Amino acid sequence: MKIRCTKDRLLEGVTIAERISGKNLTLPVLNGILIETQGKQLTLKATNLELGVEIVIPADVEQEGKISVSGSVLHGVLSSVPGDSPVTLTENGGNLSIAAGGGSATLKGQVTEDFPTIPRLSDAHVFTLEAGEFARGVRSVIYSASASTIKPEQASVYIYRDNKDVCFAATDSFRLAEKKIEVKEGVPEFDPLLIPARNLSEVLRVLEASGGSVEVHVGDSQIAFRVDGIYITSRLVDGVFPDYRQVIPKNAITEAVVLKQDLVQVFKKLSVFADKSNQVSFHLEPAKKSFVLEARNADVGETQDSLLGQVTGDPLDINFNYRYVAECFQSIPTDSVSFSFGGLGKPLIIRGASDPSFLYLVMPMNK
Image (cartoon, rainbow, N blue to C red):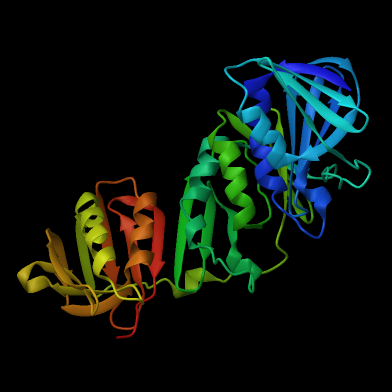
């Protein structure tokens, strides 16, 4: 194998593939990136068995072939090449020689026969979405997914069609986020999807760096995304997402609307004073138009801030995990944030003022 291509395109592809290849002590082949030629193109492949990627890069192919090398080593070598120097890759005796920028390196090759196949969804249901819109939907909720995989459905993002909207939802049982994205006409109905959140994190990086549309392929147990010469596939979770609509309170006893920028600043200070359980106290007195946030830490001290805004309903003293509340602000594009309290022991609903597309639910903490 002997090929030439530009460093920037090659490094961009290797960066994506190297993150997916990761480190696997039991199956060393998964640590590698498979490099192979197809006509006048170079293809990079990587997989960790849950997530796989193929990246097509234009290249001048002098001699066809394929080789697998360490993803981290290949990334390190290419990152050191100055400017956008042309790169020449040559397979020689089972190793890969790299020549670029007046320098050279030789990487030890790996056995290509053991490299896993990237799934091809030949019988998939295919539809197209705007890459930026899909990424925005995922980004709005993914932080609410559970970090633990004990319950796979809670470590996933739930995506389904609801009339003219594509809905994204995630929950770890302590909080829940839902985002609705209106889709253009022509996007067909599709069955609900449960995609592992950790896999979607890598998909997000690809989609957010791309423009235009993403082609989505949905199979029985796999989903794939094709955009800008990149084909990335993930397994789907075989499970049932909680019927979260039933836990959303229908009514609120206390409501408050405040500026998001004020909240962001106050929560920065609260993070300094919150105790080990991240507890923050909310004190609302509608008669005094008062909304006070308070945190205490025996080792640090205490803080109290009064927020300006509209406060209506019944007086209420209630506690929440400050981190759970603060994390949703990134998903709210409006200048003001609406808090709807169901009462003691009941969840808080947070929305952007006049923005029905996003909903965030947080369960209270016991004192």
